Image (cartoon, rainbow, N blue to C red; front, side, top):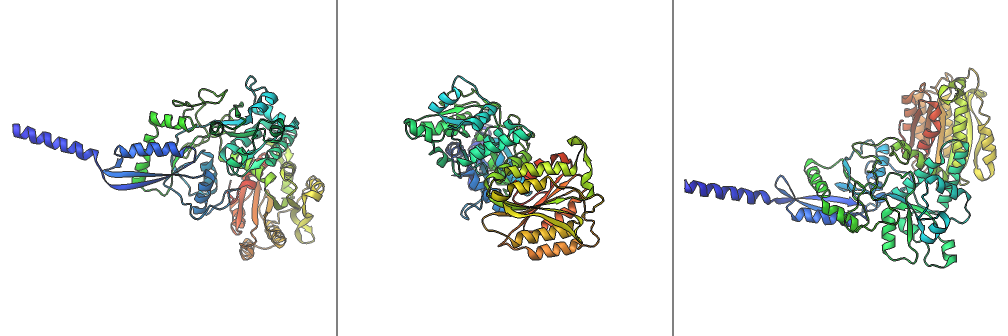
Length: 570
């Protein structure tokens, strides 16, 4: 029995030693936003040195600091889509197994364009509130910081009335904090004609001081305490709390104040996203790494780089800016598994809200050419109960006028109308040719106000779509987004015109990668044939179909269409 006990004890001891070891190697590659990468790498090293394994196979973790915009562009390239404002990623940048971007908004934007992009996990591993950064002397004199508490509406009012505040923003299409600030200002503007004017004014003020990179924007803050330097430098910009902490830690001549405005936008939430192509073994390793990032030591590591834990609380040694809340609400920007809905600054985001904000920004900042083609068939006289019984034509006019107010003078716009037999047998008629807004804005604005439906007129959709596409392509200009924006509430009803097959064949023949034309079709009401519209859009190189079952929502759909680079059926 003694021998048996000894042998049994030896076997148990051997099993314990064997269980604590591992063989082989699973390499888990992680791309992380630069500010969080050091903390992630520290946690990963501790985890792997402690015997990280999956079913007896050792796990090795490589952490690479990559700008979220660059990684988003690489993922978009892999899924053969593009995101507005990003351009192409360098060929040397490849997708990794795990991506820790600074915000879930990147995941939402990618999923809205690429149906095959379905990452898993998505849990937040850190947080940084969105603030408005101001040089301390400016904050004290202009807004009464730190004693006075401001809201986004207060800031919007100062942007519209102050001649001394020089505002800026990191390009919202490339920066999650800039996008959050943009959306917060848009929410503060509210709705209605006056609100639209305030929103446009604020966006143009931000655009005048925008920077493509965060470091470039930070260089625009004062470099000395001299009054002239402060007055001529950047006065305010939406940034993350971490940006302010890191900037002040460098000991600049003028420190930045962080203003936490009400309602607080969803913070940067650093989602832990496992990429769709990852196999089960690496997915298990990724789960182990995320669990390692939930340990108390990781929160302290986050504090050392100016970040909070995912619940908004801070680890040991965190140097919070003056006026910072002790903890902020958990991130609500949406994850790959459970997207928050809404769109209000304090209640989360969804893809549609992001698209509308980016659409507004794109219209203001990106030069383009667009031929707006409006359906004036008899069905456009139908009343819209949700819009105080305005007709579909009137609702469309309002949406078009609001959109036109966003386009800056670098745009060129033309106006056509279509029904049946508007110009002899032609179903379409040119109202204003594509013209620079510098000289033709008032003429185009007036033409939109005269969109009068033709009683009993049918819908000559196919011939009009083909003619509009040819018109934009024939006058195509490089360095701009060349688009057809076609609004319709019906199906093709022109018996004397071409067939759908003829239209699709002609569009495919005309399609020229060197002269791309975006065919964007906006369906009004629930009587459109989405399959018909999608067949037209699919025959072109880019574009898409955006349907507003409730015509009162056309303005929102229009902004989504402007921001989309590849199109979507909404």
